[in-house]
Amino acid sequence: MIPRNLSHYRVLEKIGSGGMGVVYRAHDETLDRDVALKVLPTGTLSDEQARRRFRREALSLARLNRRLRKQGVGHSLTPTQLATLVAVERHVRNFSTYEVDYNIEIKSTAEGDNKFHPTPDEYSELVFNLVDQYLPLERLVIQSFDFRVLKYWHQHHPEVRLAVRCFESRDRT
Image (cartoon, rainbow, N blue to C red; front, top):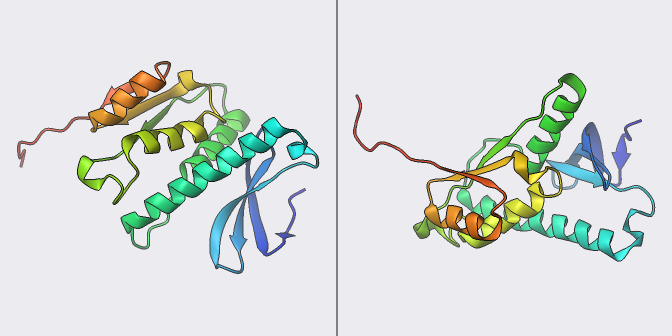
């Protein structure tokens, strides 16, 4: 059963569940915005390893959210990587017999480092910390135009497949 309210959050729908708990899409009545709300079973954080894992996930989400907010994306609404991953995995688990591989693009430029996005090292680790909790790494492909990102992944997470994004600069009109 989905709870209707948790503290100042109005629960809208269940979007997934995993080893640590259940994730709901909820509306924060205080700040008037939709959020992903993770509800943990009683006793989940009773051991130190579980507390570290939960803290690592929370810090990764907070850093990524704080850093990307500076991009000024206007009034568009896009789901977080985590919400997308959880929703797709839920759909695949409930409605299909195949697994999905994820192509995650890390967009970065040297000019945008620490201005519009974290450095490639920090950005890559934020993505890794989120994805590693929900997927086997053999189902992940990291793609980027920025070779600094690909070099980092190759050196620190060689088990992850990489793809170089490229574009043609000639005007084809």
